[in-house]
Image 1 (cartoon, chains in turn yellow, purple):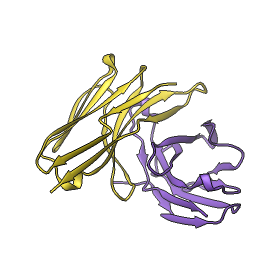
Image 2: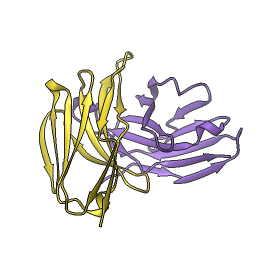
Image 3: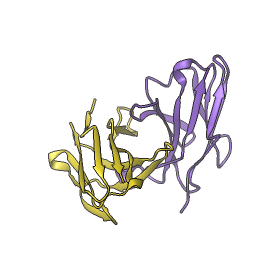
Image 4: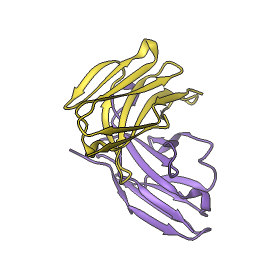
Length: 112
Length: 116
């Protein structure tokens, strides 16, 4: 099956620093989403980004589908950015339906 | 903004007991899903549901699991006889059309199931 690899697995930043999280996937996908899992376990939609670049405040994401990777940029990080960031790709199953395949995540800790 | 609502937020049960996890998807959504996350691990697909039937299920979704849409708003996951290894966060999700067709998947806040 498809492999979704995220790097780095762990990242520690000082408040105000910038960072780039990477997601590589091993096969063609229909779509890609980035999620933030906060300390309470909630999965928050960040981006729905099959290709191209999107920005939302201090966050932006770029997906290059032809090269099978996506990047999530966090600028001027804040302590509230702490948590786990997941990349998830949409694949079509053998039965013809869809499912998301998640990476293992990048655990981000932003220190004051 | 409409949300996917899950109840309860936390459930503790004894091994062998039946549990029902409840979800209210976003009202105009047509595709419904359950995902599971064992503590510290990645989120895994369990089952997808469309047009009142299961469209796909993973190998995790064995005979102990079932899903139901008993009315026009609720979507439930039942575990008939819980095992210790069923302890996990269970997420319900929904989308208006297929994610490949242009719709993101919206997740609920999860139900943390603890089997003792």
